[in-house]
Amino acid sequence: MPEGDAVWRTARRLHTELVGQVLQGSDLRVPELATRDLSGRRTIEVVPRGKHLLHRLEGGLTLHSHLRMDGSWKVQGSGARYAAGRRHTTRALLWTAHRVAVGDRLGMLDLVRTRDEDQVVGHLGPDLLDPGFEVAQAVANLMEQPLVPVAEALLDQRNLAGIGTIWASEPLFLHRINPWDPVGKVGAKALGELLVATRTLMVQACRVGRPATTGRTGAGEETWVFGRRGRRCHRCGATVEQGSVGRAPQARVFSYCQGCQGAPADA
Image (cartoon, rainbow, N blue to C red; front, side, top):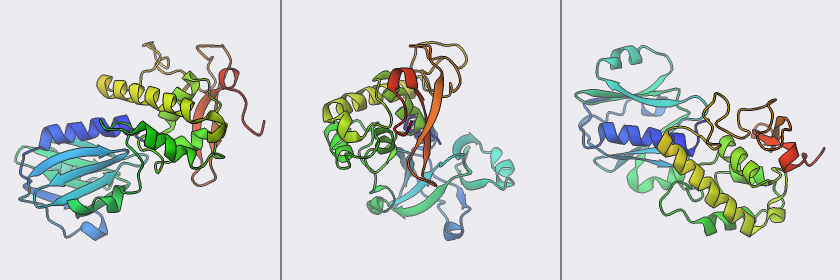
């Protein structure tokens, strides 16, 4: 699933290509929006909110989308509209005189009044990539459930928005925190330090265009543990493993090093 940095980059591309441009037409392929026409409206801005995208339009409307596991937004030349329109996975087309934004395999698509955006993103905690990110509020949210495993708490978007399995795995490894340790055991001070470090890594990923936490450039070497299952830990030499937190169907898989972080709670 695209995480906060990937969604930030998507929002930036859409904003750069469409801001100030008048939509010549739209095709929203979900039943609730099939008859809605956004033509004639100018794009005011496209902004991220955690893993969500908010495309604000003239006239006080916001097109909200979430990429879920496989979704994407791409901006192409206007001629691409016809090919994209024939794909059964296309969920949204927005076109100007010269460009077309294609929303493919979108997990969520809603149209709300801009003043009512809280209906779709109001449940989210502080956004790690928001310039005004409130680390104290995010820590307080996490500490409200002190018995929850820290990896599970970090992945709960109600506590803070933008973290997925990459940005749970890498910072926990770097700080040598066992992913199954309860939030209360980790403590507020360590959580604050962890979130500051996580935000720094995510901002860097926004700048370079990909998660790169080790400073290495070889294939499969740019991260410490994420995506490296079965390979040797860069730090201690133990085998990188995968674990999970939460209950099905919300269970989430992440990467860790038992040598550096300790064993699962039930080991």
